[in-house]
Image (cartoon, rainbow, N blue to C red; front, side, top):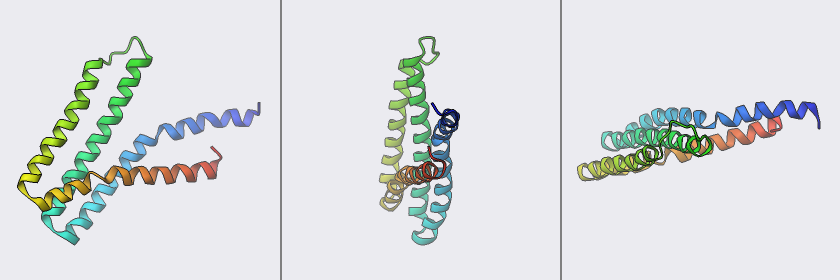
Amino acid sequence: MNPTAANDVPDADRFYAGAIRRILRALAILAVVSTGLVLLKWGLAIGLGFAAGAAVSWFNFHSLARGVDGLASRIVDAQSNERGRSVVFRFVLRYLLVGILAYAIFKGSSQAFRGFLFGLCLPVVAMLFEAAYEAYAALRRGY
């Protein structure tokens, strides 16, 4: 076995372990920049709806990452403090809150609802940025 390759593995593991943190950071930056652009281009109603959708998508992604981490901890570690019911409850509560907020925005303004739906799509863009960054790092660093 090549000793240099064995030393590279921890760096690669550390790099890929930071993906969730990088996606959340990219999502926050995208939300701020995109909200400003949407406000300028399409006005207050769509801009506020977009901002609400972006905030919900950030919270939803963050909660999903924590839930998956908690569930994995529960499965792997028998002594885990994570309770199975609490993981499922948080999962259901997250989507219930998104549904209630979406319904309230839908009833209030159809334009704001459209902005909200587009704001909910921001994690896809953040994950695409992360995929491009990981591909670049893999080619550049040889992971």
